[in-house]
Image 1 (cartoon, helix red, strand yellow):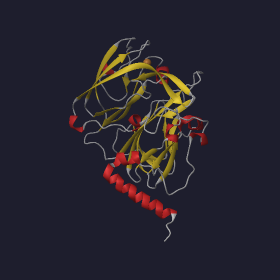
Image 2 (cartoon, rainbow, N blue to C red):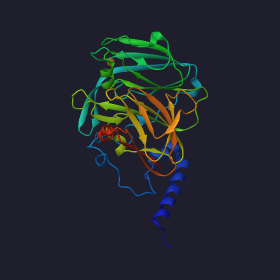
Image 3 (cartoon, helix red, strand yellow):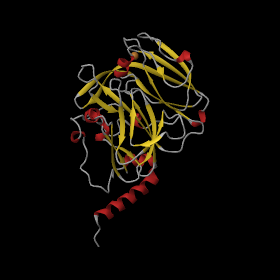
Image 4 (cartoon, protein in one colour):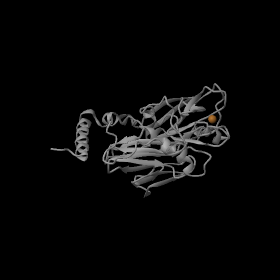
Length: 328
Ligand SMILES: [Cu+2]
């Protein structure tokens, strides 16, 4: 009896699903070596798409896990106070295989950590400025005006912001010290996800923050990456389970390009602008975002395979912002 290649793939897929049940969903995805089957494609690399915007060589497939997969807020702790400390530190970060960027960071990474709360929680955020520049911390969304965060925190200084998390949705935070475009371009930004009462439908959740870097010092962004380094998800596709609901919090922090987009190949998605409503605003495959705009999107990848994503602005896609999702 001969076994065709397709039968082999099906057998392998069934075995993987069985292992998945034993290991748990996330562990299975991380361990899966059967990234994509069914369609024979050349192994994608950033070199085939773009100008060599490969990620730093010291990054491995799990290096952006903390940025990619947001943690849930503790559901038992609703209507509570969440105390968070953010340190502003100058930090050189690798943004491509041959470029390092002298970033200004919240906590040592660009983007800064994704914060999470339930609607109505009190956020008590201590900002410690460990740099030689004045900075501050400003949140989007609705909150107490005293916590708006536009006042400077001097070098070595500290400020405490108390705000009520809301409305539910996905909200940027960033340094707003003037000129704020420069402070954002240097890396001082991140996301706050606020979950609605009773939560949302169970889903595989992702964060995709578009970052721009002025790598050559000419005052313009010329390398781009989702969640930081250029070309990371071109080299290491984001693995999601075939057919499962995926919810991505997508934001744009490229401050010197008037409009960018998130485009997904081969599937469409529901858009919830700012994540602030329970009903989608549209179903599309191109989400346009101006500077600091954001959205929540939901979709399922119905067939195993690699689904490309990138901004539909070619310069960004070819300079680091092209990636893959692999439905496994
Ligand atoms: Cu700043």
